[in-house]
Length: 408
Image 1: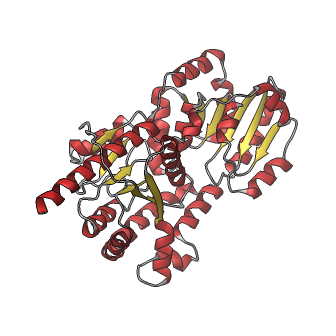
Image 2: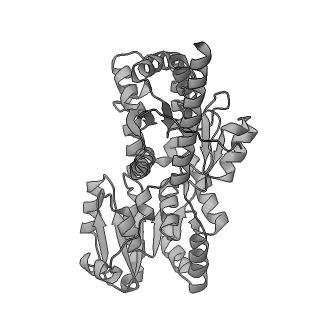
Image 3: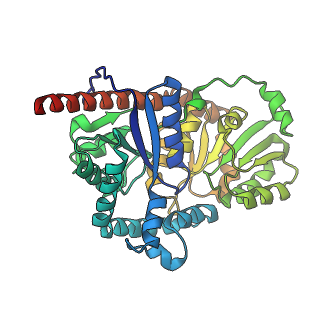
């Protein structure tokens, strides 16, 4: 891996275009994290967002691309989010194969469309926080504005090749948050100078900011016991109906445990959890931007193995419990493996046994080990990524200026 050398550049403002997606909440979370740290650092960058789902929907409506989802009356991202909310994640292998097929069928049309799109945009740097589209992204950018750097920030702890995050035949820089993704990139033939290793996956800078509050008083304000062991249940931006089962099975702990449920954009789930409350104390909220606050009030996390929530929990020093089985999203299975290997949490085969898992998890010697391992993790990826993007821009500007002088 090459250490990029920075150099001063006189340009007043750089246009950074970020390719993102509406499937789940992780892609926009990565974009918002990157934008926030850049604003903190007061860098001369102007961000624009390219939502690949929005563009694909428009092209499908104009019948310029093939879309199998129109036959079902859904967009691809709406179906994905419904799948998460309803617990139909066992459908994902089929949907992923269909997505890869559609990307392949629409490749040439997509490259042509985006080449014109980039000619109009004239970005200085294009950053992708989505899988599947990175080959076409590289080709379209180079057709429109040769030499413009393209960076793929891998959002998972491992790639799921072929044609998912890593596209070895492109010149994309790859931001790899784990040794696994570095190994995969090298194995697939990515040039060493294009591989950027960070200390983890991207987490919003607000998770690193100190939270100054009285935990006991804040728990009381939410209707919770100030001194009771508190678990946070979080299943992404759209929640999951499995949270109802978790709530029911953990009732057996009664006053020994209390729970905070964050349901995301799933008001129906939030209502069901409020209405089903038994003797055990719980606080329920729908979508919120105050995840760091609720993590601060909690002692551990129960979650799906999404890289975003895992990384946030590690920054907030929360050990976790998650499920891994045939229904787990394929690209998230290694995330659970990593949690298990590093012993920062407990991985169970099925949440039907969540009560037994919690009992084992909370045995003093087990819980102390998990907490110590979590505390040893030091993920500074969002700041490292910002530093590396600055160097990529500086080198790109330097190369462009040199070429311009030689042309003259």
